[in-house]
Amino acid sequence: MAQRRHHYETAFERLLRDRRIPYVAVDEARKALLPGGVRPRLSVGDGPERSLKSFDFVLYGEGSNLLAEVKGRRYLSPRSRPGPGRLESWVNAEDVDSLLTWQRLFGPEFAAAFVFVYWCVEQPPDGLFEDVFEHRGRWYALRVVMVEEYARLMRVRSRRWGTVHLDRASFDGASRPFASGAGLWASPEAPAFEPLGVVA
Image (tube, rainbow, N blue to C red; front, side, top):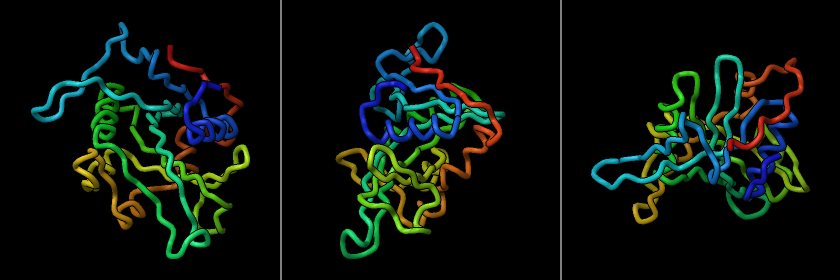
């Protein structure tokens, strides 16, 4: 298993292994995703060019592959505080631009997605999430949003910090359980896969 910086990524990678989904964990420091080790640049509007931000995993399947960026967020259930629970969906606007660029570079057999991994302070009640798992004593829940759909629905959250988000109705409509898409990347009858490791 690749060395991950955040417990959200570690937990998600464990889930990939447990579900036998073939993947590559992308190491930002040593990636070589394009021929000749080319480092593509991102240019948005009239601003200066900058390095293209990396993502976390490439998931492989028959006819469909996912470029996945993990976004870890903490979820506090209504039992932990007054009022309804909230699913934060904010990302940096640069993340959206970079992932759409990666999707174009990889070609039509790849699609970019945000994988929101919610750390739940306690086991979520039945029916709240369709995709819940435990890792190292912590509970996690997953929701996935395809980046093209995110870009279509996103709103500015903070101009100062360069962040965008989806309102609750948009997030509810655009997000889906990871399990519902996992069949695109691995069959339940698929043999056990070992991860391909870190892209060197």
